[in-house]
Length: 288
Image (cartoon, rainbow, N blue to C red; front, side, top):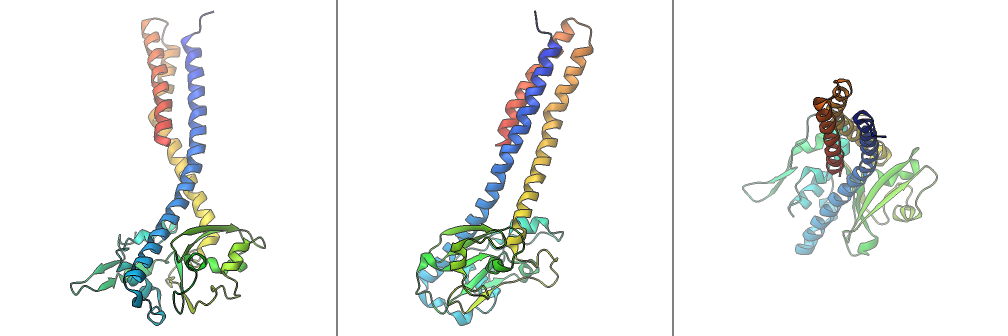
């Protein structure tokens, strides 16, 4: 029994919708992983900038010089790490209603000194920095900086996620729940006050006008921000898929089903089938 174009259209449309939904789901997970990978990459760049400064200027690390976050930012900016994305969490910035921050947080003055842009401190800096008496310690075991507020994990009342950059430049990710902490995290921050062993101080910067959420430790709402970014991306991708491909195919199929059987009906049905096939392939490509 020959298959009608209307049945063929329904079959192809169903396959298109299924593939579209599956592709959106899979690529949304990939995008959430990409967000985490970017945060780790930003931290690694900061750690390398710090290592470069201490390697080329061994006497430049003076714990008395690092009294506030501005001092640390100026130190890494001297190594060329001036991009704002490196010190602000992009998810936190995107969720804020304030204007976007400047692209760079520091500049080189005509006198060849580093000047930190004060407007950067209108936003919560995304890291906490440990200051030690000296750097003569195991580099692979010494936390240099981490996701802002992660050292307070013992007081968290909900799931959390954060990253730690070590003195040798490698990054580790830690997640947990209340009363179910990673043993390795307990070893990194053994003190009740959350400071790493032998650290003389921990630098943080949160503006006074921050929202209640931004004033909290970043690891406690980082999972929520990642989920929100994933949902927003899924919503935009679904709308884009419907507008660009599915809706025109529906219109073509509707016309093909109700136009009197003949050359025009066959042409509409064939064009619809081709459009849907191209749409399926295109949806897969743009979702990767």
